[in-house]
Amino acid sequence: MTSSTQKNAAVIRQTSVSVKQPKLRRMRRGAAKATRSLGMDILLFIFLGALALFMLIPILYVVANAFKPLSEFFIFPPRPWVVHPTLENFVQLSQLLSNMWVPFSRYLFNSIVVTVSATLGNVLVASMAAYPLAMHNFRGRKLINEVIILALLFTPQVLYIPQYIVIANIGLINNYLALILPVVQTTLGTFLMVQFMQQVPLSLLEAARIDGAAEMKIWWEIVMPTVKPAWLTLMILAFQQIWAQNGNLLIYKENMKVLPAIMTQIQSGGLARAGVTSAVMFVLMIPPLVLFEFSQKAVIETMATSGIKD
Amino acid sequence: MRYEETKSSYLMMAPFLILFTVFTILPILGAIGLSFTSFDMLQPPRFIGLSNYTRLLLDDKIFMQVLKNTLIFAFVTGPLSYVLSFLLAWMINEYKPVARSIWTLIFYAPSLAGNIFFVWTLIFSGDYYAPLNGLLMWLGWIKEPIDWTGNTDYVLRVVLLVQVWLSFGAGFLAFIAGLQGIDRSLYEAGRIDGIKNRWQELWYITIPSMKPQLLFGAVMQIASSFSVSEVIKAVAGFPSRGYSADTIGTYIIDYGTVRFEMGYACTLSVVLFIIMLLTNKIIMRLLKGADND
Image (cartoon, rainbow over the protein chains, first blue to last red):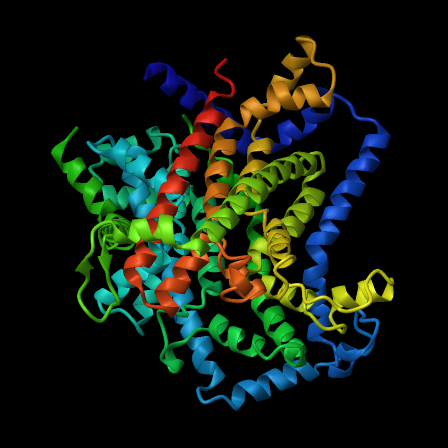
């Protein structure tokens, strides 16, 4: 017990130190690491570049398709790029959407309601639970933390049908809550929060405790501002997951459906609809990419504490 | 431990614990219970003992097919993605912060951008206007367009490729973060102890220092390898021809949403849970034991 605690303490100290002093590390890097030849540098770049192309080509293809006129989909040999870029697909998309039985704005509204409330719910629920799990010392704490780590395995896809049976039985089908509540309890979120909060020095809380502040107040006013990178990260992870969920099984009333659900419908139109499909994919991929780019630093800082200690 | 603090501990955990119980624990326990029944959501479940399990092992030929596919995802693309994620993170770590963040975004983008894997259905489309067929025909490598996703010889490989494309997720980010967190003085100490090249550095210093992240990455990898389903449904069709690209995961969805045999779907789920837990146990033991010698 003591040796493992010491080891953990060392790990935590190590990560928290390095998180706080990036400048110092960077300056020392050159001196500290074994040197590498120019040849290796070039090889490394070629390897990374080739893999990066494999990653990027499909995405760039979506972008090109989104701006392709229909005629360019039917030329041989096919061109992955656009010759005469056009907004035709977006116009067609908006026509398609305005001719739908349920107005597009309704799907957008549904998506926003679900995504915003589930993301906020996830961050609040996870960080509130993480505070005692990281900082209090109560009976059952170790067990709950272990169960959470084990539950990381049980993704929504793995639980799909059993979860559907539960949701149907408590009468949440065709209800926003069916899309919200299951993702509010992501174990990954709670796990990351616990890990990050364990870094917060307990001395920070002592002063407030002496003043007799309630635990809820300490959590909200002292801990939450300190762990900002962690809840930013959680927001992004939750947002990207919830934004993409189509809720096929859970929502079948047309006016309650979310954006990815109509994307599936448009996509089933095949190659003739390839332009419009790509336009939809293009629109849907922008929010998560932009969000991530702006908060990458916070995400990396949070993931630094994600390790599972044995 | 003060009584008041324990009370507030549980109060603060209550929302999470309640939702976790309802949407994670209850489905797992429910699936175990319903796996011994015949249940179609309309009539109440009827107890049929071990029939579902004997049917699965003795009568269901397709189960063996989807089990094989599941294991291919878990033990071929899984480790490949895991090792690739780590190596890439290690290589990216050599770059300055700005370049590093660009590489990170590039590799993480496919996992990040939600449903974008749909694009592969266009790339692998079966007619000759589709990019891949067009390219191969233009090069003269094939004479006729190939129906990639409709052909039982190719479809599984297509899905495996897409899955590799989606490799760089939460584990990858954890590796990048972990590498940045390694105490640089360890490398100096290593030089004094006679470490000569970067491969030795990687093996003797970097990997042991990254153990917590490597464990986390492994759990994430196991979770994602066993939950491939949306990608298969989108790329290979649902169900794929002759179930040639289906896994236990999509097979469960088939029984649950198309045939409404919930009892059998739950049996399949329980089997999947057991395989995942066993895999997790073995992998954790392997990784944890790695540096105890």
